[in-house]
Amino acid sequence: MKSGRTGRRHTSAQHPLPFRSWGGRRPGAGRPKRKASGVSHQRRPPLSSRYPVHVTLRVRPEVGSLRRKKSFWVLHAAFVAACEMKGFRVCQFSIQDAHIHVLVEAKDRDCLSRGIQGLKIRMARQLNRALGRRGPVFADRYHEHILRTPREVRNALNYVLNNRLRHKPIRDGDWLLLVEDFCSSAGWFDGWRRRPSGRVRVTGPPPVASAKTWLLSEGWRRHGLLTPTYVPPKRT
Image (cartoon, rainbow, N blue to C red):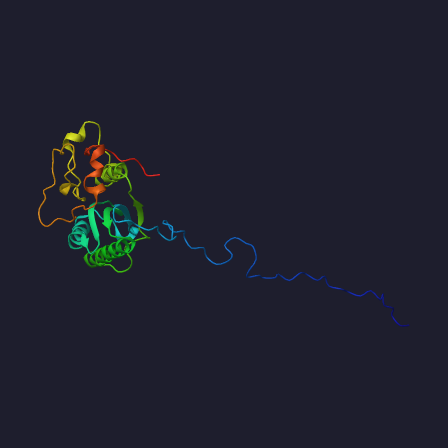
């Protein structure tokens, strides 16, 4: 007698295969996003020769503090050599740890761009040589503020020449011990209401050029001379 069969077929369960996708919506997918620039890349407005400009130059963190003796003297030499070029003048400056403020005059937009670019190239080359490094020095496009009124110019002078007090405030009553910021053009500035008790010794060729615009040479004085104890507020 033949053995019977149940007729039941064995079927194996089908498990879904994992599907690996290289796209789709998931954290970190897609092209890496570029870090947003700190200064807009829109076309800059035209510039009239009668308006001074407040320019801020920021450096990369790996460059280190610009107020170190070696770095400062390199920048000072660059200002001496390039403070006055064709259609461009650097009239005041201050050097902070990670940025430089300059008040400049320019014949027009092209002269301003060429002047700032030439100054940056000179500074970058000399800083890299002095520090034994290679690569970019400045972090971004320069920031600018066109100054159109005597009050704006006075505020900019206060901001630039007293800028160190924003980063290292003095205590009440310490103004008698205050010395003009050595890492700035304060020693060549003649618009102080009173001189600090300790003055920077001014020697050698000046690192700044004389202002030619009415606003930066005379107009701002209508609102009063500057005091060395003024602490500039944060810009908005």
